[in-house]
Amino acid sequence: MALTQERKQEILTQYQVHETDTGSADVQVAMITARINRLSEHLQSNKKDHSSRRGLLKLIGQRKRLLSYILEENRERYQALIGRLGIRG
Image 1 (cartoon, one colour):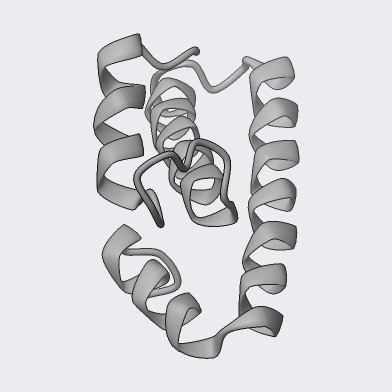
Image 2 (cartoon, rainbow, N blue to C red):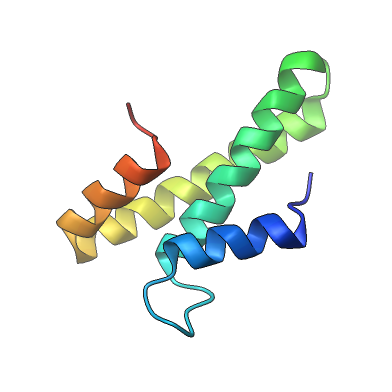
């Protein structure tokens, strides 16, 4: 369930912190969220795909760790990011 190059570029331009940013925590969280959303759609129609479910859980854990890092660094940036991504309702 890889993202297309065009979709990655869109996410990168939306969430980069500065002009040459390609790997900040914000960008990583946005990329992982896109992958999580895509995997969730896949698992709704393929309920018995347990290996993809395991991958989804690993991605959720990775995103959680990155979000906790952002929260420790800058609370306002964290609030803005989860608001933009629409996570944690």
